[in-house]
Image 1: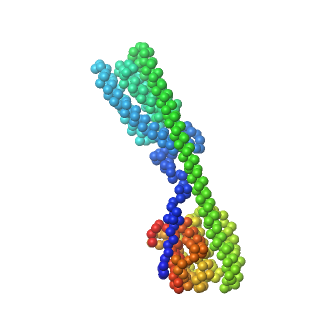
Image 2: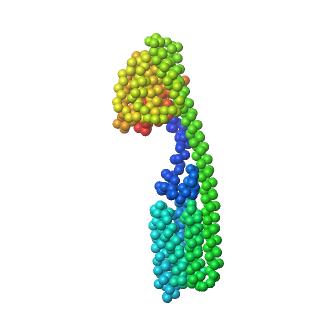
Image 3: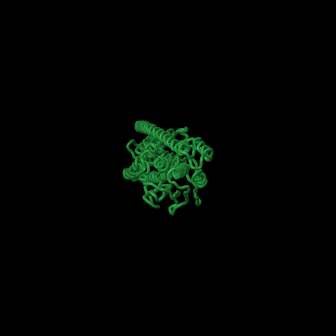
Length: 427
C-alpha cells in the first residue's frame, strides 16, 4: 500500500469495555447446578414454576447434599469404632457386625456422592432406611440401648444432616430422621424394657426440627441474594438494550449521511454526468432509509452486497470478488456502506472516473476488502475534523462492527482503503 497508512483505534481501545454490554448470563455458572450437573427431578417437583431457585439457592442445596454425607460419615465412623471398644466381650461380635454395616453404609453413600442422580434416587432412600432400622432394632443384640451409646450419636447426626441432604424434599429428609429415631426408641425399649430412653428421643427430635429451621433461615438469605442478583442483571439488560438502541440510532444517522444527504449534495454541486442517475440513486437511498435499525440480525453474503455497492453512476469500478463465507449482517453492512461512501469520495475528490475493488480471505481466514483509486490522493493526517465521511461513516462504523479500516494515501499517489474483519489485532 503506497503512502502513509493510518489505522484508527477501535472504540474499545478508546473507551474501554462497556460493562453494560455484557450479558447477565455470562456471570452465571454453566448450568443450573453450577457444577455441570442437571437439576434433578425433585427440584422441578418442589418449585414447579418457570423461575425456579436462583444460583445462590442452588449452590446451597448442592453443597448441603454433598457435605451432609461427609459430615455424617466423619461422625459415625469414629463413634462405631469407639462403640466396639466399649462393648463387653460377649457382645463384641454382634457390635462389630453392626459397626461394619454402618461403616459400609457410609462408604457406599460417599461413593454415591460422585453421581448426583444415584445419590438422590429411591435406592439411596431404601438403603438409608434399611440401615437405620437395622441399627435401631439391633440394639437388643449389641446391648447399646442406653442414652450414651454410639447408636444415639448415629441417630442424632442423621437427624441433623438429613434436612440439608434432602433440602428440596423436606418430608422425605425429615421422614428418614423420624424413622431412625423411632427404630432407636423401639430397639432401646426391647433391650431395656422401659421408656427411659424417651428423653433422649425427644432431644433428637428437637435437633431434627432445629436443623430444618436453620436450613430454612439460610435458604432465605440465599433467596435474598438471588433477588438482588436478578435486579442487578435486569439493570444490566436494560443498559445493554439502551446501548443497542443508541448504536442503532448512530447507524441510522450514518446511513442517512451515506444516502440522502450525499445524493442531495451531489445534486447541489452538480455532477459531470448530469442528472440521469438521480432516480436510481434516490430509489436506493429510500430502500436504505426504510430499513429499521437493528433488524439485520442474520448472516448474509458479502459478495452480492459489494456488487450492489460498486454500481456507482459516476465511477467505473473494476471488481474482483473471491468466494466469501457468510458473515454477520452488522460487519457486512458496515463494509457495504463504507464502499459506497468511499466511491462517493472518489467521485467528489479523487478526480478520476475509475477505481478497483478486490475482496477475499487473507492467510488467517479474515475477510479483506480493498478499494483503490489512482486519483490525486490526500494526507490522512491533514483531514479537517468536520469532515466526517471517512472517519465517521467508514472507519468508526467498521470499528463498531468488530473490524478495522486502514487508510493509505498521499498527495498525488492515489488512495487505498482496506477493510478487515474480524479485527484480531494482527497486521
